[in-house]
Image 1: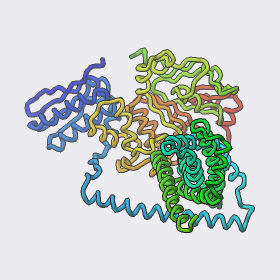
Image 2: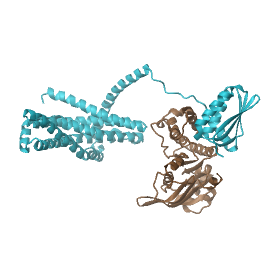
Image 3: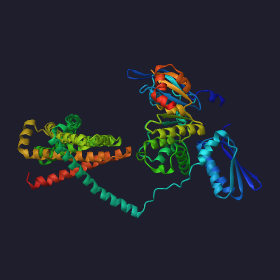
Image 4: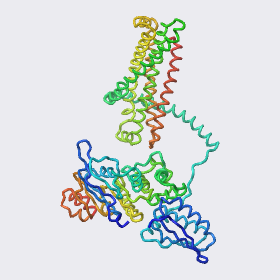
Length: 377
Length: 256
């Protein structure tokens, strides 16, 4: 009963009959489409055409549409066309398909020079928009902070503690491990190269200054941007997608106060703590390598460290931490609240959050370096 | 083919599904006949969606067997299973449209995977499907986030129908629609069932749907089918939950 579909031509004087047979379904669509296209071309000469579908064993939307397409193109060529032999089962399907309004598919426009220029312009304007968005969010967070200071009861302690656990306590193992390893590597490289000048002991100076001033806080900030910044964006973004943020707003809550402020505060508290722990782990790792690999025993290491660094180095490092935390938090929250309805948009904004977060952290570090150099710290 | 008409399109035997210690379905039997619209009702949390998801293969079962189109899904190999999946369509409760694809791409997604069809034919069929579910062709280039709730359901139905399946699963198709929209949707399911020869498995809470769209009703309770039959059978039943359901205030309003 099921067979390959065919469309046979039988000429009857001026009229032409097209006999459709076999299975007219989606699985035969390529064959069917070719047959219909051939029939459209060859039927031009005759005046009236009779499409007989009584021998069709199975018909679905694809088959019905192709018959309808044939009918339409023949009718357009001023050929009188009739469909006959429809069984009761299929006539409603063919009627349904007949209602379909043919619509030319509007294709997306091709790449043009003006289009490219427009895109460049929009990207540049987008950068200005990004900066404006960050300042906007900074203002909103500060305003919310001020409101909370006036009404301390509206402060969300539970939420802040929860986020503090997420971004600080749970980050300790990975931060300590990575900074420890970086301390080891700096010490090993220092000793390896300084030994040629017989200046092994200066590795302690290098390690102390580098870790306390720069590496400790910068590395930890980058890790936090990747670890917690992305989490903030994804959380806020999926809440935005599911209209949870709109729900908050309609209940009279300020999303900045409820969602952003506790997260920002947790991050601003967490980063100095993590930076301190990271610096200690790096010094410990460096000291271990100096002892085992460089033969600098711990007492000599500590004595040298005390001479090499002052409290200034430590302050320079730790002062940067809360500022970097604020930058990461603001970028993450702006990106999270900018998420649109689709999963793709969530992914894009999470990526943007991490990339922009790390970029701004490094820019801030440069600004601080210039500042501290000019005040002589 | 004659034999196929006799056999149920879905045959569920002795299905048990457990989440931790709670047994959701407990030795459940169910047949769905070819060409019918089966309405599936039951109290909230009774496991209606769980049964649907178990038949589709999204929830693992502890015991029992499921045959769809005469193929035992546990004993089937990958290609047999693929074949069965190609012949059914699923409308999820929230639509589950791919949010990063347009309506057109959503509907064409299964066609692209399973059929070798020209882009022109795919575009035309997409418009045809959209027309069938009562949407304008202009919707084709919108993203799911730009659609209303009712439109999302319709597009999701169009996607479920894109391969011309023999069987569709509808999980609460009318929930979240206004009564007029819900009525239209029932009418639409009926029309499509007639024109495409569909078998419909519909989980619903909507009494109107049961009265207007369904040929047969199955009721789930305590992990089993407590009743199955026509709407008249349901009304005659003495089961307490059924009595409340079909003779309650809302039911009287629908019938009156």
